[in-house]
Length: 481
Image (cartoon, rainbow, N blue to C red; front, top):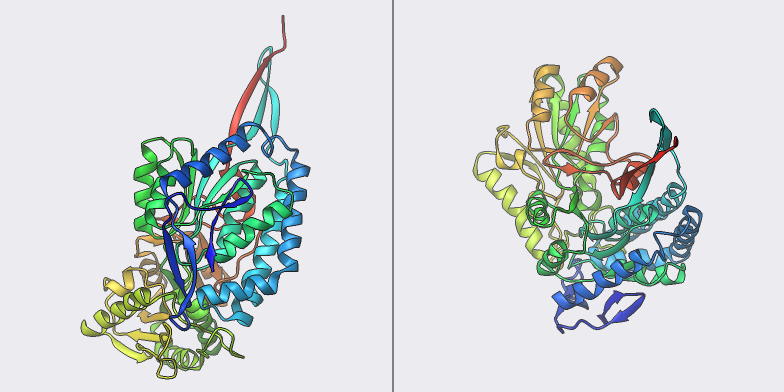
C-alpha cells in the first residue's frame, strides 16, 4: 500500500515523488510504502498551517470549541482502538495485546481527553494594578505554527503527546512522524477531519532526516518540538538558532534503578524486568542501570536473572507475548554492538546477549543482564535502547546517589526502599525529571514528563505542556485621564 501526505485536510501526492519502504520488524518483510516529503511538500504544509493560524480558524475558536473537537477525536480513536493497535503492532513489532491495545491506545485516548479539558484551564491568568493609574492584563496566546518531529518507539502515543497540548493552546501544526513508523499517525490525521478540526490545522508530512531538517529550517515555523536522541536534539537546536525558534526537546535517558537493603528482591526483579523489556527496552525511561546495596547484591542479581529469563519473547500477535522484536535490523546491530563491546572489555553476561533461536526471522534480541562493569564503561554511560540491564553494587547512600547521577542524561530514575526519609532525601538530589519510589515506568496525563541535563527541556503531558506552546502577552491599560 502506498501512503500519501496529509495537507490541508486532504491526501496529496509528494511533489518529489520519493518513497520509503516500510518493513514488518517481526518478519523483515515489506509492509507499506510512504511518501518521502520534499522541500516543496514541507513548504505546502507550512503554508497551510500558517494560513490556518493567521485566519483564526483554530486559534480564535473558544477554548470550549477546541476542547470539543479534541474530545471528539478521542472518541473516534476509542471507537477504532483495535484497528489502530493492530497497525501499530504490525509497524513496530509491539506485542498487540500486552502493549499496543493494552497500554498505548488507552493512554493515548486518555491523553487526548486530558488535553481537551486542559484547553479550558484558566489557572495562572492575572490582572491587576501594578503602578498607579494603570491596569495590567496578562494574556496567554498560542506560539503559532509548530513543527513537530515524533519518534519511532511510540508512534501514535508520541504523536498525541505532541498534538494534544499544541492544539489545546491554539497552535497549528506540521507533524513529521519517524520514517519507519508513520502508519498510525497518518490514520490519526484522517480522524482530525472527522472530528471537525479545520483544514490546515494539522498536517502530516512523512519523510526522513532531510524532511525533518527542512521543517526545522523553515522560517515560518515558530517552534520545533522533538522527541528523539540527544544527538538529534543538538542538531535541531543549532538549526533553530538561525531563526530564533522556540525549541522543545525530549531526548535520551539512562535510568538508574537504585535498590537498598530493605527492598523485596522478588518485587524488585519483577519490576526491573518489566521496566527493561516493555516495548523491547526501546523507551527512554526504561530501567537500564541496576545499583544494589552490597549486602543484597547476590540475592537481587539472582532474582533479576530469573525474571529476565522468564520474559516471554514472541511474535506480536501470539498469545502471551510480553516482548517483541527490536524496530529494525540496523537497530539490533547497534544493541548487539553495545553488548559485544562490553563483553570484550570484561563484562560478564549473566543471561541473554544474543538472538533467540526460536525466531530466525525478524529482529528479536534476548533479554540481557550484564555485570562486572566499570562506571565509566560505554554501556553504563550511553543509551542502548534495548532490553539490556547492567547490575552493580554500592556501599552506602552517598555512593548510590553519586552513581545514579553519574551520566549525561536525566530523564527518569527509581528508588527501592521502605525508608521514606531515605527515599525523600534521594529523590530531592537525583537529577532526573521523574523519580519513582518503589515502582518504575507509570505516567499519567496529569503529571509532567521531561528531563534534566542532556535529556532536554520542556514538558510533555500535564498543563505544563500546554504552557510550552503559549506566549505571555502583557496588555497595559491607562485608567486615568
